[in-house]
Length: 184
Image (cartoon, rainbow, N blue to C red; front, side, top):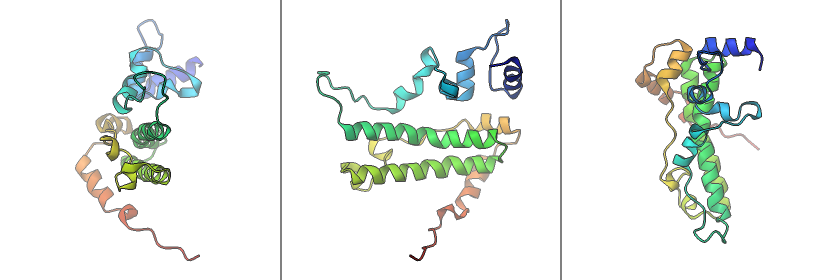
């Protein structure tokens, strides 16, 4: 990475530099919400690299280590991690690309809910008992959607934060209406 990129990212608040001008990887990862660990093939080091994953994924390792984990349970856990990460990621990218905070809020909600629905249908088609009984992918694992640091995102967007207003706005969007049926 060249120096102008480092200066640009530092000015945007996307990285943290040490007093001697080096990038503080751990602090920058926390600032970026873990995105640094996969940016352009890079891999984070240290305790923050796996911190979020341990909270979400159930332990699928068999006690005897001779039996591989159930493939459907593994798919369920993997899909749950993606669902928990995708909404906040979409919101952060929306703000980074210059979209209003409303758009980021709507994407956080809608993308995660749609991903959960897609995953639940996939798991149901493959015989997962909980999703076949109408539970969502996250709900069937006892997980909830990941919370985003909206205060930090509003600060990055340089706008005041009013979560109640954002929620009220989102609930009045057409997202909640059934899509029109298309004739075949």
